[in-house]
Length: 454
Image 1 (cartoon, rainbow, N blue to C red):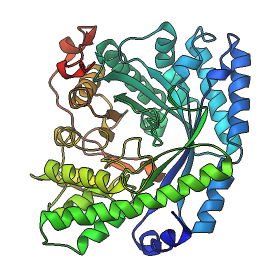
Image 2 (cartoon, helix red, strand yellow; image 1 turned 45 degrees about the vertical axis):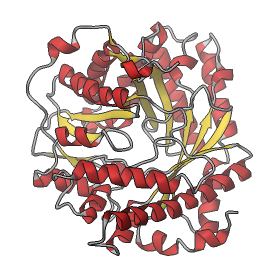
Image 3 (cartoon, rainbow, N blue to C red; image 1 turned 135 degrees about the vertical axis):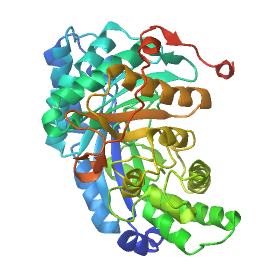
Image 4 (cartoon, rainbow, N blue to C red; image 1 turned 60 degrees about the vertical axis):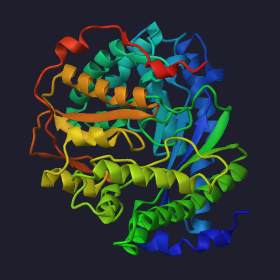
């Protein structure tokens, strides 16, 4: 049984090593809100969210105070709006009205973010989904708490290259629409391959159609805890290293399990999953890159980085999976640049490039995340970066994603400040050679041969 004594032993982790529950994410199905009238649809959405989530923030705060566990974010994910708005939305402005409704509901219940302004177009786009995608720049420019995601491929379907091309354009348009805030809108937009239905982390969270009407998912995080544990076994063998990571991941995940079960009981909503990802913050000592250095690298990006990250990711999963009844989401190690001070330091030292980050994504929890690039990067180059990253996910049967920020008006060598958990980032150079003819071919890349398992 899980009890309060298990939490007590984590006091040092919380006070000295940056252990926290990164998010309680309440998934809400909006399928029963669908209506052909856009005004009625917006009313239904607002009423359901504000009814189901009215106690979410207070419950999270109460648990945090009672158990002494920091719970950083309270979030909501909803059914992909590309599905919910298909009947009612005839223009991009119709979809933007839904984004504003979601934003209004998020403010009303007090959550940090609401995810699910999304389209699932791995194999092709319906007219409604294309409208939603084209509405994203205006939606993110006119809201504060909306997170948007677009699924462009999977191992089972291949890659929707028409969607890849379109998203290169949409990302640049979003950057332009929010250029007065250093293209902040792009920090709230991610494209994915093999996206899970139960991910509690933003910006890729949405409430999958396979989920229950409402669900509680929790994301835990403890890079600082893992680093501190590894400091005690410097110079030991890989066997000792792996055992240490597994034991630490177990303890971290148990904290998430108790929070998830308690939130589920108090809200009367089923417990979904614990995502045991190591999600860094800009805080010193709360860095995945620092773990890699503790394993033995001078900087993240040095030779051996991909092997070290593969080891870390695998041991986190092995330790964490034994600590929770249900593990899901992404579960591994995130490597966002702007949100990880160690990654920022590695970029500034010249140890880490986009190409090396791409190699690391073959073995990490997600993909190219929170990377600032020059604002004059061509649309087609962004599409090429997306295609490369999603191909890794498709072939390797894993989730991969791209969240790049072309910062309008800034170039290599400059910095951008996003604030809060989004952090700050150096502008990284991108390959200057063109992929325009490749991106403009149209159609889709077929699923790989190993996808045929029926």
